[in-house]
Length: 302
Image 1 (tube, rainbow, N blue to C red):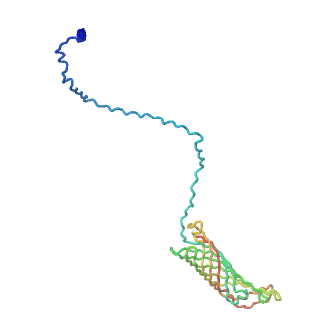
Image 2: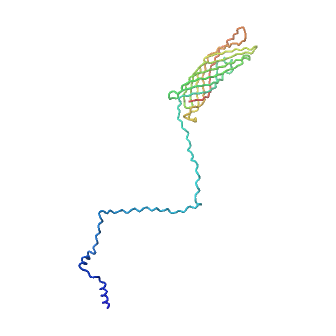
Image 3: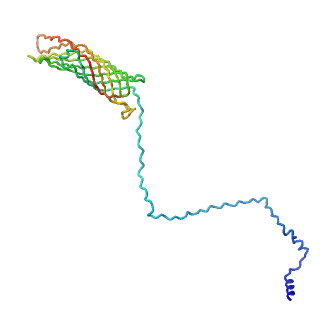
C-alpha cells in the first residue's frame, strides 16, 4: 500500500513531457556548468567617474560653562596716556675759536722811582684804575693769537708839604697797544703787549701862609708801556653750551714797566687884577715812571 501511494505521488509531481533533444541542446554539460563565466569587458568609451569628496560638516564647539562671578579676576585698571619718551638735549656743533673780543676793567699800582715824586705823595706807589677793550685772531691753525686794543687809566697823588703847601697831581692816559697771546691750553693763556700814547698831567701848588697863593700847570708828555702776564678763563667744556658757547669770562694778572718823559714843574701863579707881572720859580723836573702791575677781570666773546 505504501509503495503504491509513493508511485502515485511521483506521477503527479513529474513535469510534462518535453522534447529531449531540445532540452539536451539547451542544457549545459556538466563541464560547462562548472566553468567560471568570463566577465564582460567594459565599454571602451566608459571613463570611471571619481567619487565626490565629502563636504566637511561643521562641528559645534562643546559648550562650556561660564565661570562663576566669584572666580573671575578683577578688571585691569584703566591705563592713562602713554608716557612720552625723555627729550634729548639738542646737540650743537662745535665752533672753532677764530677770533676773540674782550671787555674788561682793571686795577693796579705804579711804583715811581723818581725822588721828586715825594713832593706829591709820601708813598711811592700810586693806585690806578681803568678799562680795556681788545681783540685778536688766530694765526693759521696754531695756538698763537695776534691783535691789539685800547685802554684808559687814571691815577693821582696829594701831599701837604711842610704844613704850608698843598701839592696835588692827576694823570690821565689813553693807551693803544699791540698784543700777542699763546694758548697753553684752553682756559690758560700767556700774553705780552706793547703800546703807548699821550699822558695828560695836571698839577697844582697852593699856599695858605699869609695869603692864598695858587699855581696850576698842565702838561702833555709821551708814554710807553710794556707788560706781560697770564689769563685764566672758563674753557668751553665747562660752559652750558660747551662747544657752541660764544661767551666766557676770566681774569688776568700782568706786570711790566711804564716810561713817561719828564715834566718841567713850573706852575703859573694865579693872580687877580694885579698890574705887576708875576713869575714863578722853576721847581725842577718830575719823571713819573717805574714798575707797574695790574689785576683785571674781563668778559670774552669768541
